[in-house]
Image (cartoon, rainbow, N blue to C red; front, side, top):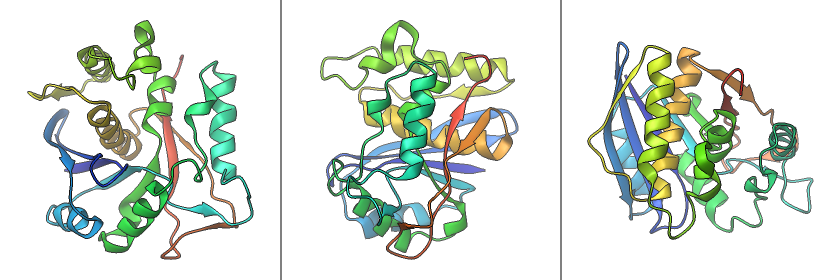
Length: 223
């Protein structure tokens, strides 16, 4: 069973992670920076049968909002505020420039659209309690190097649920972390390992292909 995570950014800063799940064993089988076109990225993914793809990019646009903030984005900000986490990590579509377009056009070329979801990995990291020693506050800083600390926290959480995460990959970039968090979010959602918070679409949210993927983040009880 394969789960994909995609951290959509610019053409030279888009990250892809694939995990394979056999029983309770999770193996990171691929983490790459994809430098090609959206069509090439979709073609690469479509070669593999997958259970879920979770994408870190807005996959709809609020036609009724001048500021580019969807109702789901506002709701996620409110959730983060209530949990004493920074809400400004949830950005408007306007500030993300081409990212929403790249995400929405990717939907056009991916197969099995009903298996495609939107998520927010950094929000999930906070809500999962991964901000140990402020690593989630700082892992996007240029001089951050302690990515192994984030991976260790993920491994411990999964171990407590009876899962084993295996990886020989050495993490050196926040995009790798985000794409892994996206892939794991799909697994958590499908298996019900942790709680999914669904962020509903508004009737006025639009998509290029007239399909609105479900948007969710993951939260751990007791955090």
